[in-house]
Length: 199
Ligand SMILES: C[C@@]1(CC(=O)O)C2=NC(=C\c3[nH]c(c(CCC(=O)O)c3CC(=O)O)Cc3[nH]c(c(CC(=O)O)c3CCC(=O)O)/C=C3\N/C(=C\2)[C@@H](CCC(=O)O)[C@]3(C)CC(=O)O)/[C@H]1CCC(=O)O
Ligand SMILES: NC(=O)c1ccc[n+]([C@@H]2O[C@H](COP(=O)([O-])OP(=O)(O)OC[C@H]3O[C@@H](n4cnc5c(N)ncnc54)[C@H](O)[C@@H]3O)[C@@H](O)[C@H]2O)c1
Image (tube, rainbow, N blue to C red; front, side):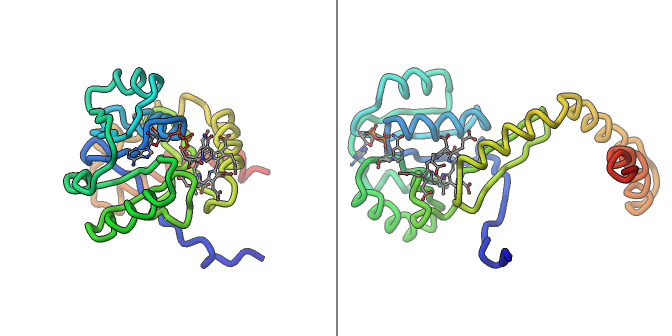
């Protein structure tokens, strides 16, 4: 049986465009994390620090005005002006050092593919307009997270975004107190579950 307390992750959705992220490393894994960060938040402010920045990272990052690149070794002062840190370097001692220095500054840190060094994990993401679903397997299998993403991507219609926009407009139009509005909004969405209830 699954014990719920084994899964301690608390999901949040960050406004990365309002935060400053440091990415340490400029190789393949850095490119993957950069793609995930900018794919979701193209206006992110990201500083990349790496001894070597690959042409692929350079080309991709060049499309985003919020990204700055610094081709040199990491230094502790890189942590001074940031809110979040993602480490994708190929040096375990450096990972441990950044984690230690980051903790001193109360920063949240992700060390790519090293769950024990992470304060937060990146997740698989399903996006349909305003709808965004983050998927985590509690670090057990990112491959399964990716498959569930593919499944949900196929199952959810693109029109779901129109429904969200309609509901947002409807909420603004509704009169009455909070309870009245919630009752009305629930009435309007009941049909979304009708096929399930009809079974
Ligand atoms: C979701 C996604 C987001 C992203 O990276 O953007 C992500 N990994 C993705 C893909 C992926 N990564 C790996 C594989 C192949 C192997 C496999 O599946 O095991 C695949 C699949 C593929 O590439 O097809 C390798 C891997 N990853 C981790 C380990 C270490 C370990 O497990 O101990 C190893 C083994 C390294 C080795 O063997 O050396 C660890 C982490 N990877 C996480 C996130 C966090 C947990 C998320 C969760 O709770 O589920 C966590 C804990 C930390 C973090 O990195 O944040 C992204 C999906 C992209 C998509 O949606 O398409
Ligand atoms: N490539 C993969 O598919 C993969 C899969 C799982 C795990 N990993 C692990 O992830 C890590 C990164 O992998 P990668 O393929 O991106 O490696 P990589 O060699 O392509 O990139 C490593 C990056 O770290 C930078 N770096 C190293 N020391 C630095 C320092 N002191 N300051 C600043 N930058 C520094 C390098 O310049 C380089 O840009 C490795 O530990 C690897 O074992 C890689």
